[in-house]
Structure formats: C-alpha cells, structure tokens
View 1: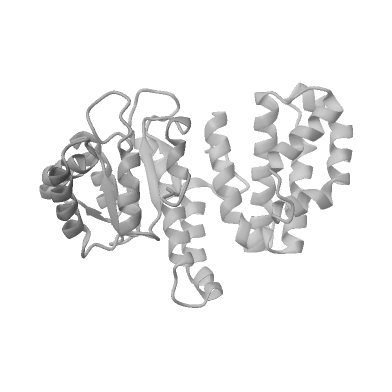
View 2 (view 1 turned 90 degrees about the vertical axis):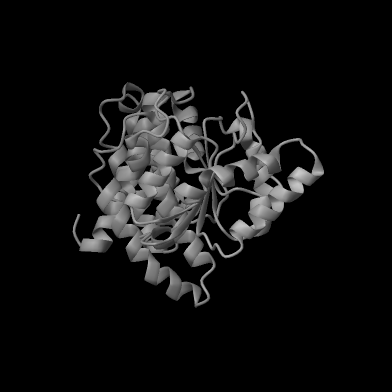
Length: 324
C-alpha cells in the first residue's frame, strides 16, 4: 500500500522533516513539500500561525492556498509545535486551515506533546484523526527507526485504508473487499497483526494497548460483523485466559474467573460487535473486581490483552487457513 500516495508534512524542524521525508519516500510515498520547497513553505506556515499583523498573515495564506491548490494528499502529518518556543502549540491554529483545505483527508498529529496537552485537536468541527508521540517508550529518541517501523507505518496504513474506503465513489462493500486484503496482508507480514504468534509485540504495556487497539479496529469489520466469528473469538479469548499460569491473581482465582467470563459470553460478544457501548477491557476489569475484590494491576492487564490478541488471532487464522 502507498506507492506514489501523496502525503503532506507540516513540520517545523529541518531534521525531523528530513527523517520523515526519508522514511516516506523509501516506502514509495510522494511527499510534500519537496526538499527545495521546505524553507519557504515553513516560513509561510509560521507567518500564518504567528500573532503578527494581518497583512503578513494574509500573504502567508495566499502563498499556502496556491501551494495546496493542485495538491491532493491522502494523509496529512501535522506537528503541534510549529514555532521555536517552549510549549508552543501553534499547530492547533493551523489545523482549521488544513481542514478548510482538505475536509475529508485524515490528519495524523505527530508531536512530543502528550495527548492531554493537545486534546483540543479532537474537539469541535476541525478534528484531527489520530495521535502519535514522537518519543518511543519514554526514551529521548525522537523519530527513531524503531518508531517508524513499529508505530508510524501501521498507523499510516490504517488511516489510508479507512480514507480510501470511506470516500470511495463505488459501492462501500466492493470498496471494503478490494482494499481489505491489501491492508491485512501488510499488517500480517510486518507486524504480526491478527496472528496467533505475537512474540514480536513489545512487553511494554503502552505498546501492547496500542497494538490491541489497532488489532480490534482492523478485526471489527471482518470478525465482529459476523455472529459466528464474534462468538468464536470470545470463546478463544476465554480459552487462552484459562491457560494463564504466570499471573498469581489469575491463577489463584482462575476457575471462578473463567466460569464468570463464560456466563458473560453473550454480553462480551455484543461488546465486540458494538451492540453494547462498553470497552471490553473495562468489562473484564469489573469482573476481576467482583471476584478478586481489587482492581487489576499491570501484570493482569497484560495477561488480558495478550489473551484477547491470541483469541482474535486464532479465529482469524482459522478463517484464513481453515486450521488452528
């Protein structure tokens, strides 16, 4: 996926721009702005978001309107800090401008700011679509090779996929069918998404939660829209849960927990199918609290997420290969 697909970058530092540009071009994307346009483009972006005179902002707006006029990006990567001052969040000022230009293009916010600091980007009419922190695993390694390969690449593919499906001019089901195999093949090969073997997943809880979130989104159409598949997914999840031996809180209460989950299977299936508006993790947490008498800790959360991953993976493998 992504050969010659145009992607627009809004970034304030040459070094970060160069890293993103290199990664995207190596992977076959067409990137804007080109290297020779970056400085003038950035100058006008900064003039637009600065608290300066109206003439300067008007001239910047004219330049950017012309710059974007014949560009049809399928994805926009937006930095929040567009001015060289600590705590700057001027990207939030530029978001409405981008939305006016491209109302239906996914916008991915890529920043060192925490989600809480930029949550305004997801409110109102000018919403962004996804958020990623440039710093991987709380290390001071902005935009590392590991970040690009394990974090940015699958998110780009997910956003491009849903963009193509959502705004397809053809029948929605035909569009889903034509693009789904392309997306799943990529995710299966590169990131063990929807596979039983998930050894490549980081043991970091944050990464595991992100992986599970992406997996559930991808599986939603293919698995959760089908009663039989959704039911088997929950059954496989509970089966995996019953095999856990390395988490004391689970091992000591396993029988009662599994019985409780089996009794709640119908409700769990409805949650997966979005017939009940509840997070599956929150539902499991409530079950734990009732039986164990305390909230789950990190080891329990990891065990639940891994069991969910394996459950989806086993059902997916069966429907793809006919064999567990």
